[in-house]
Length: 269
Image 1: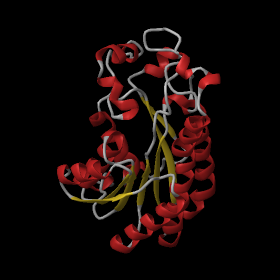
Image 2 (image 1 turned 45 degrees about the horizontal axis):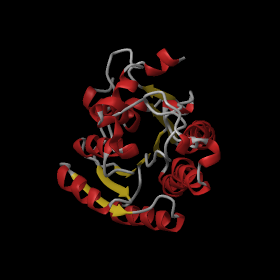
Image 3 (image 1 turned 90 degrees about the horizontal axis):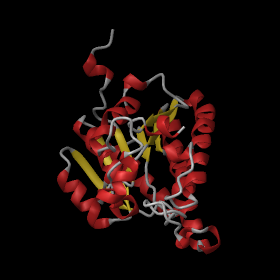
Image 4 (image 1 turned 120 degrees about the vertical axis):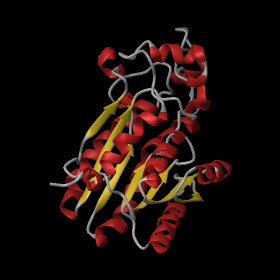
């Protein structure tokens, strides 16, 4: 029987976290580094990377990478493999709120989010970051994991994949729904190679997405009202699930879409 220590052992693992300079990505980087993994953060925010690296105990470094730049992603993955000797675990976490929804948190119509007023560039960027970058991340992860006999890919999706949110930018929901299907499809393809692919579906968490609007009391109240436990998530709440999926304790998980939302989805559905 495995001990508790060995079940959650990630010591020595080579880990990449996209969008790891803040929010959920930083939480993933923190728990993995705390467990003894070697972590590389990819993010477009250079100063944010510096703050994260300085603030996380353990072996952590970073690369400034736009996850929408496919050539840059290939180079960045190769740099991690060269430095660590392999890539074991990848968190495909980078994401954005693509812009205002058609309603405000106060329940008023928002003309800036109306479908006829959405700039095509806003739609394209939302799909590019929230969906296409997951494809690019998984593709590069698999290049390195297959020769090494396996690995773990953990994708940050959202409960927005399962519902429609009127205060969230329009491209966000279809992008996350597609991510869920992609995760299941990749689990089907890659299981034979020892690669497990799972998705975490967070509900509302206090992060920097959408300019950190959930730190605003009025904006936060709309989401707190959806929670069965009366609060929205803190990034600390997600660390245990991340460690589970990245460790031997999660070895029988693949193709799973795991909701972590304080019961918000249950109330809304």
